[in-house]
Image (cartoon, rainbow, N blue to C red; front, side, top):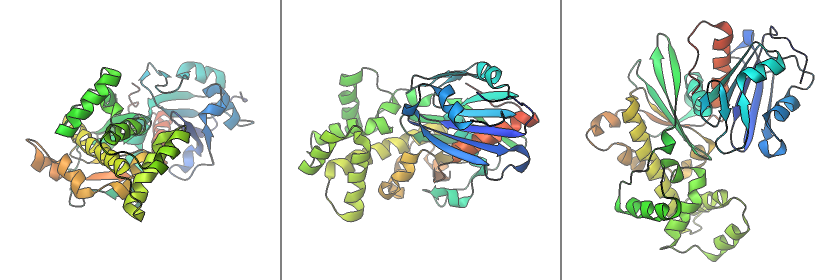
Length: 347
């Protein structure tokens, strides 16, 4: 790749998803200032991450530290991405580049690490009356290509991010409609995870389930027949229906079903981590769906069961800043470089 210099004072942060990768270079001494350079790449344009990184680092001094948030479970500082056939090993990458440190983390760990750096303008509240408990854990989940989950726990003046693969836990239906959905999905997949009914990849199947009783209009059928990825078309049809009065009942019902499942899973994660410090819903899809999110309905699903009163007081927010994972990766690169706090968990 490039000439090596592990003492450059440069930091490389990355957010690697299933379809695109966002990379940014920072100066350690200027953190948390803006990046020196930032670029987004389509993963399909590269055979592997090494080729993509080489394109970004052309004629660039090697960074002193690298932190990459990657969509997949990270074990022993190595990862094979969940929805992309790329493998990355931190030690091998460090040796090839000659940089000081390479830290690989799950992409939702990166998002969680970015939450303390967000301001009010970066967040859309779904529970305006919620009050965070000081020094309590926080939870984050993000429906994207899959369903990512993570959480933050307090450690002195810091919050340490921890990974979870909770999106692959079994889907537990809450209503009669969702019981029928489970039967519908089980006939197709066998085991049905939460991710299979609460992610961007799930939306076409939710639409197919709903459309069995509420047929799609002909214009949408024609559009879906031509679409390589049906999710954006279904989402846009639902948004047009609620914002512009263009009727499309199956799209609206599919997205409402999706959001009900998301609200219930947000409550599940909150209870499992005792996230009294707040719940944060990330990913570009959640922000895109804001016109469809009815906050009272969302919170009615969220506040259920034995601890409904406790859940009613927890802040729930949608993350609006698309750079949150990149901010988190940069923050953890700074921590790794300064070595003044425990290393972030990598699993």
